[in-house]
Length: 388
Image 1 (cartoon, rainbow, N blue to C red):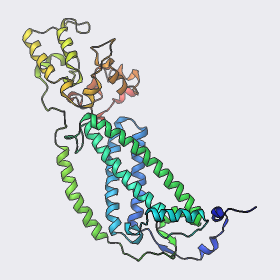
Image 2 (image 1 turned 135 degrees about the vertical axis):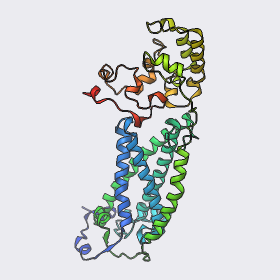
Image 3 (image 1 turned 30 degrees about the vertical axis):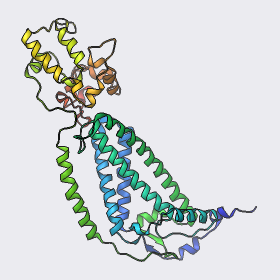
Image 4 (image 1 turned 180 degrees about the vertical axis):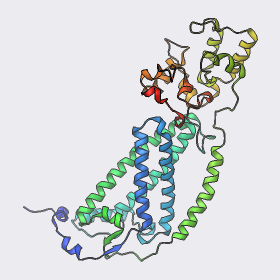
């Protein structure tokens, strides 16, 4: 049966010839360490982003910080590394990619000592996607959770948009990784070289007939460049992160509200309910969820004024947006709202009935920052007694 020229490489046995070709160093230590750490960091981000619950956000952010550090390093190493680490050896033009694809279609199996054109394009695409993933993640963090260096600038609505783009880019990264792995397997089979092992050892059979001019790695230059970037970015990031988030007015809880309402239950931050809800609650204190919680006129007016000025309409946080829509069947109870139900849907009902928690309304039992109205995912800690 005749074999297609395009599939000839699948049947050609070049193992003996390749065994006679001495391996040469191709991937330097910088490339190999970058490759290994990136696999680990992206895996952590994928697991904590797609699978884990919201309280794993801290680990997700750590993974993202490592990713952006690695991307910056790779950009620097692309100018300072050894020959095949340098972007100058990446022949990823459309003409080069087209020529390489036609080479494969003709059944030719000329190995490339460095990245072939398709592989080089894949590396560049991954770097672009990773940079976009980090950028949208930082904006989403600032807009939705009011954390990070862009919290002072990002609105909640723009944060939601950035989060949607972030999720799409994350799916895109997974698709690129899948294509990358498939490409490595295909090319390993095509040229009869174990490319995965080459990335681990740093050596490949060679040289080929298109060997690039040799360049030595310049680690000191790379170290100085990384130090310069860190010296500019880290202090700026810390300073910007310390600024108040957009739509998060800073102000102390009214002492009278904390004293009177906190005497019977957790004093909910005023930003968790709208002005309409607070008006209804304050006008019905004589029948407050089955209790008479009436106050004198002066106290009532003072607390009502505080709640009105600090209601959800004046905040741009996740919590203030989540609880603006109330349950029509129980319009005064925050824990009956669709937002509260959605955010707590993964928690068993039995947890709220334990003594350690004390009810659905005891926000401070699990949220260490409940009194501030922020409810950061990193500060969620369900009591161990409630989980037993």
